[in-house]
Length: 188
Image (cartoon, rainbow, N blue to C red):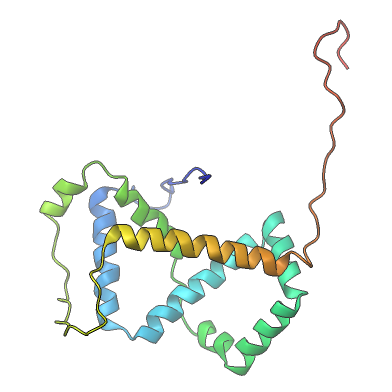
């Protein structure tokens, strides 16, 4: 497993992130889920992914990937499904959830060394979760299983998207370097 460095930087235009503010943000998002439809929740997350994709497509690597997908059968079929099922219209009417910010903020909580003390004094969610009736297929939910499941899904998604785009992606230009001179009196 190769991990990229996590970028968790406070912006100049907002308050600094603290464990308290991150917990409050998570509680607020959980509270909102009790008040909106599942379609709105999934739609806002999906619109957030669309917006993130639009931003990533402005980078060299993202642009290459987007063009490869758009020129492939997968891209054409995806567009046909989105237009036929009006997914594009549905998502265009919803606000984009800042999915990457939420992910980074939630990961910040996992790295917080004062989380225990904040949770002891945390405010309770505004809306209590409705009582659930147990079903025969219910399983015990465990945080570690959830994270391992996310890790696996992320790898599958990346592999699938790269496989889809591979036949039509334009190769990155390669800059070749000449042999390096290790010793000598003249610098070249």
